[in-house]
Image (tube, rainbow, N blue to C red; front, side, top):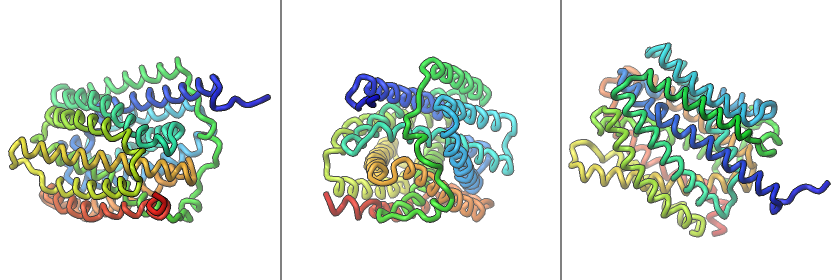
Length: 403
C-alpha cells in the first residue's frame, strides 16, 4: 500500500487538523494564563513576598519543570494527545486549588513553585512540539509572528478579566472561572478528537547522560542556560516593575499591558513576514543589540517621569523585546530543524530550567531577608543589559558565516 504524499488530500487534511488543534490548545491556555498565572509574581508581591521569596518560587518552578518534563517525555509514548492536553489542564486547576487551599507561607510557596513548574512543563513542551511540526526555515519567523499576534490577543482578554476579578471579586472567582474554561476546553477536544503527529512519539526519551553530554558548535547549551533566566526576568521581575508603576493595582496593570499589547500586535504584524526574507546574520545581531537596549530602558523607567515619557519608554521596551524574541525563536526553531529535531526542544527545556533552578534559588537565599528588595531591580536590569550580548554566540558558527 502506497503512503500518502504531502500533496494528497489526506495529508493536507491531517495538516489542517494538527494546525487547528494547535491553535485551539494554545488559545485556551492563553486565556487561562492571562486570568491568573500571568499575575502570579504580583499576586505574591501583594501578599507580602518580596524579591527573595519570589526568586525562591521561580527556582522551585524550574525544579518542578524538570520533574514534569521527565514525566512528559515518557508519557507521550503511552497516552494520546488528548490525554496529554487533559493532564495539562488538570495541572493548571490543581495549581489554582493549591493556592486557594494551602494559603501563603514560605514553605507552601516552594510547593506552589514546584506545582507551577510541573504545569508549565506539560503546557509549554506540548505547545512547542505541536508548533515545531508546522514550521520550516522559510516560514519560521512568519509562523512565530502569527503565533504571537494570536496569543497576544487571547492573553490580553484573559489579563483584563483576571485583573478585574482580582481587583474586585477575589481569588475564588478566578478558580471557578478557570475550572469552567478547562471543562469547556476539554469538551471541545473530546469532540474534535485531535491526533498527535507520528514524530511526537517516534523518538526515545532523552536520558540524563544525554543531557550531561550534550555539546554542539552553536553555543546552544550556554544559551539555553541563559535564556531561561532572561525569560523569568521578563515574566516575573519585569511584571513586578510594571505592577509598581501601576501603583499596585491589578486592574491598572491589566489596562497597561493591554495598551502595550496593541502596539505589540502591530509590530509583529509588520515584522513577521519580513524577518524570513532578511539576512539572518544582520537581523539577529541587530535584535540582540535591541534586547540589551530594552534592559537598559527598564533600568531607566520610573513613576517619577511624566506619563507620556514613561509610556514611550514602555513602548520601546515592548518593541525591542518583541523584535528580539521573534529573531531568537526563528534561530531556535531553524537550529532544531537543522540538528536534533524534537530532542533539541527537550534539551533546551532541561538546560533552561536547570539554569533557572540554580540561579534563582541561590539568589533567593542570598536576598531573602533583604529590606526594600525592589531597589535591586535596577542593578539587575543593568546586569541583564550587559549580559544580553552573550546571545550573539548562538548559531554564529553555522549561520553567520553562510549569510
